[in-house]
Image (cartoon, rainbow, N blue to C red; front, side, top):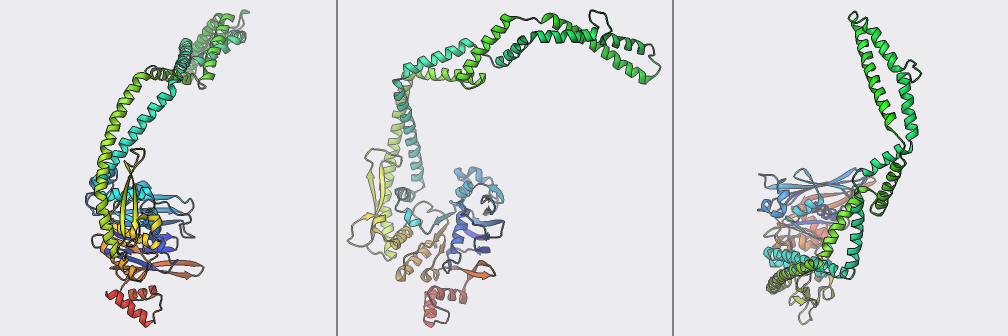
Length: 560
């Protein structure tokens, strides 16, 4: 049950707090007063998308928060395993919340004070509340919605069966698609095998190694500049050793400095530290000189080596250009070629495996399809009878609903073996016809009300109707109100209505009023009872507070 709804800065509503009761809760107000804002706030709590400019002008964000009584067994629902960990361990209620930011239009969702996603709100919220919008009756004309109603009415086990059937059908489609792909490639199989073998052989013969190209580039640059490298090494060696002319090189000068400092060793610690550093420099210079001598003697121009590096680089670069732009991509392409070759070379075996899988999956789908059809055939007459009974209560005596199960011409489809269509005859003696053709707007609203609580969401504890009574009036309106109140006997019903006949039957009544405050407009929501409720019923009857006849009528409605 929805216990509380709190709203801040949502469109016309600056701040509102509604405490709902069990049974029928009515929300009324003038057209444009802001009743639809309340419907949108509930839609947000169910994970719906925020409307554009939904934040009240001048505010940074809008906030919607709803506190729900937790249904029994919801923590053990396998589909809510992850969400169940966030639910209060001992409390019997949970708070869902949504924040919408004005600057970006983005929203944030929360469950029990912890961050969540809109999908999380949808998964949890739809198990506690079912929402029937103003134009929900239009969905009744859609084949998918009609099938959903029948399957939902057939029960939870039937819905699990339907989901299993859908999974089996998807598997049949997947296998069939793979077989079709094999058949499509059959004509080009030999050509593809030859091409893959050629590309793989080319890469394997090249025997490219990761990092090899970088090493070859470095070696080529070294071979191209061998004279400059040798001259640089020789000049540096001469500067260190003094060269062939016997001049004083850096190494000799360093050695002389080390010897001079050694003669004063042990007298001053500061000078000893400097002497140690000079000695280390002397050793380092000697090592560098030896390595420079070896480098200069070892480096040599080798045209054959340069040519070999150039040729090797050309082979690698050609493969790189053909297969992805890097050595790693070339090696990955080789792996892909091996996999594709294996698949093509064993296509006949794979085809046989797929056909066996298809036969098994098709058999499973057929078995599930038969059970699904049987469940629908059993549920259809029960749904027809129950809806006819309710339609009679809604002043549609003699109206009847037929659930037509027409076998698909092409056999089993994603929805099952049959197409489901709801047909209605709104008056005795009238032929049955599809809902969209046979019923007016008011009649469709009553058909939807008759179906409410029977299909998907029928087991939720709160039903919300946004002006489901549109297009009806008079005694029909009273019947609609009685139906809503009857639905509220076993659960909670929240109805946004413009009919006094409906509002007068509510156990809890909220009035939405709009008023101007300077340059802005504000909508307020308050619970009404007693004289205030009577005044609101008079207003809904189209009269002012001084109209005695309307006042008497309002008292009669409330008394009834």
